[in-house]
Amino acid sequence: MNWLTRIFSLGREDTWTSSAEEPGEHVEVSPFPTAAASRPGFAVSATALEGLTGRRGVGRARHVPAQAFTPSQPVSSIERFAGRSALLDRVIRAIEDQQLHVIIYGDRGIGKTSLMRVVAELAKSARYIVHFTSCGEQSEFSETFRSVASQIRLLYDGSLDPGDEDVERGGTLADRLPVGDFTASQLTEVLEGISGTRVLIMLDEFDRAESPRFRASIAELIKNLSDRSIRVQIMIAGVASNLTDLIAHIPSIRRNIIGIAVPNMDEDEIREMVTIANKNGGPAFLPAAVEALARVSAGLPYLAALIGQHAAIAAIEQQSPEVTADHVSVATERAAADILSRLSPLVTHSLRDERAREPGSLLWSCAADAIENDGLISSPALIAKLSDEGAAFKGLVLPVDGDPLERWQFIEDGVSSYIWLAVTADGEIARKPRC
Ligand SMILES: Nc1ncnc2c1ncn2[C@@H]1O[C@H](COP(=O)(O)OP(=O)(O)O)[C@@H](O)[C@H]1O
Ligand SMILES: [Mg+2]
Image 1 (tube, rainbow, N blue to C red):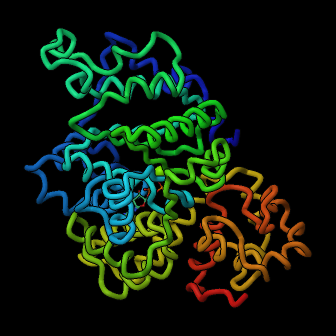
Image 2: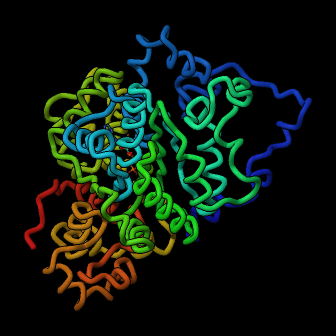
């Protein structure tokens, strides 16, 4: 468990309950804004922000850059989804035409959840029953799939008569599952009857599900669903190594799945993100700002959204109607600081080393390489250098355990992005490393 996880795993009451929130206690709320003009303060009242999300507030939303770029939330509508047309088409063809189960993988922030959300939206409009769930450390098979089954009405159980009493009272497939835990085979029997619709089950953050039993049961379910042509498909998102584990349980499911890597975006796709954001509010990006953003974000949509949001805020702070390349430069620095604040003290300490921030240094080249290769340092030339010099970086980089390609990785998520942005913010804009 890292330090951040430890903080968030404290008991909720201990962390969040304040005495002023005791039931019945009256909390005096001062008129908004509370801060004196010279001090930092919130700029817009929370109730006004709520209003902006409704239809009537759309015009005013132009002043809220936070709504144009949402780095901490996945995109969930096709209107806000930039680029990725070929990828989206491939996923849809796999589901609709080939009736395969789909596994998408890639590094954090590359856009997996956004892709899943958009596929979910499109599938719903094509009348699929869609169940979206994010896996966690404690994910259990029975609990997850009981919740899926409770979304499917008995009306779609072809083995039942439409006049059946249970169908008429609006029962669901969950009513047909055994009480307590059940196996993949028992679930298969219940799902087998589905007719008149198709079901798409989406399991995001699959890598977080720690239980080998959970993963083995999903693999078995996928095999059963395929073997019996049941109208239920599964789409999984997660990191590649865990998906390999999934397949390792039952190698024969390889035939029934398609694995799709989510690559970095190209610069045109990042430009499209800006075009969409410009339509959704905030000051307009000048062409030079768009080019700077496309360059510094290195094809990672998360970085593009984070820097884009900071750049719009920087422009607003200066009361500029437009975002310039200078705003992007300030934003890059702020984005680096954001990322640094989430790293562990140990890593932060190691990053003080001058060599981490040198453009063209080994560590910087490794960061650039990792950003382009799903977080893994993959260039043979860099791997060879790391074998000689890697230990000098105080544990910032480590060889990937058991990797046949002998790749290396940074010790924590975010380190490569931080190094990349910190160097870029120092004025050394993104020339690709030569080795
Ligand atoms: N196709 C896209 N169009 C616009 N923004 C995107 C797109 N893909 C990702 N993003 C942005 O990048 C951020 C990270 O994406 P997300 O889907 O959460 O990645 P992942 O699930 O791989 O960690 C999101 O918050 C969103 O703002
Ligand atoms: Mg995600």
